[in-house]
Image 1 (cartoon, rainbow, N blue to C red):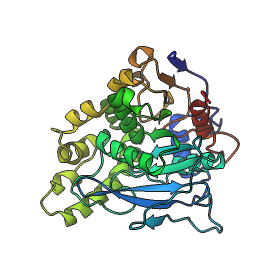
Image 2: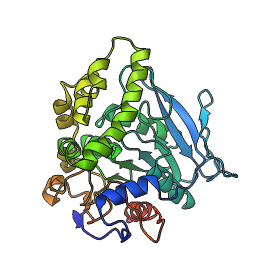
Image 3: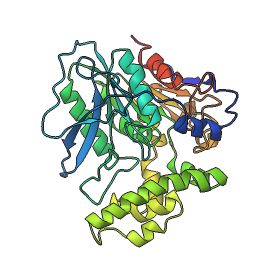
Length: 353
């Protein structure tokens, strides 16, 4: 297998001229398909929980019958019993980005596209991201290989005959690619992986989000608003377990991770956490087909931090289109659509079919 550097374009609309507009419009205004998810709750080894939202052909309808939002059906006691699948049934496990969920614009678009192609789709929620606080003072972080492993083990156990693929968006892509590099040949059961708009160098991304108007006054406050809300809930659950005052004073993601995410997950602070959990150093160790897709105008990720051919193994394809923003790969006439990204994923996943 030869390493590829793909610079082919994502045909972004001309009325979205830059990475900022492409990012914000896709997240806020591109029409989102409605999806029917069935939620399964799995228990972790530390007595916490992870929620997985499924959509399985023959078991779940693709879309709701009415115009109301399709809230997930929660399976907390009953095991999910999928129908028998043929040995060639393709399946996709999706890992969302920072503060994302199965309702994120990219998750719904990808799920809808692949279900139309008769794929099984499962969207795994990181702890505390499924709409209900998790049970421990800890939460989730960008390099949580143990939880990725737990999720993979579970979905393989549920559907052992499926041909599994995995995709991670942004933070979820970082965790997935790091884990893929760590596991090397042991992931031979997985057909392929893909990381989309991945902050491969967490320090470079953090520094980028601390500079410029949008980074300082739009993106960072957006993330901190929901993250701090969860922290207030954790302080009520676990009084004195975290430094609530220092965390709530955070003005940047570095401050937040230095006060909470790093220490609560066993790191010395944000610098130690970001350095050890960046996936870029692990790209050389990947031993299964992997697509790493980053727009060069991503407002979160400086172009200078993107990997080149020398930074990756021969199993990795780097796709670095000029436009697309951060998970903002919308195309077509107003109000545009989000089909280019899932089509690109399908093309990569099926190249050996």
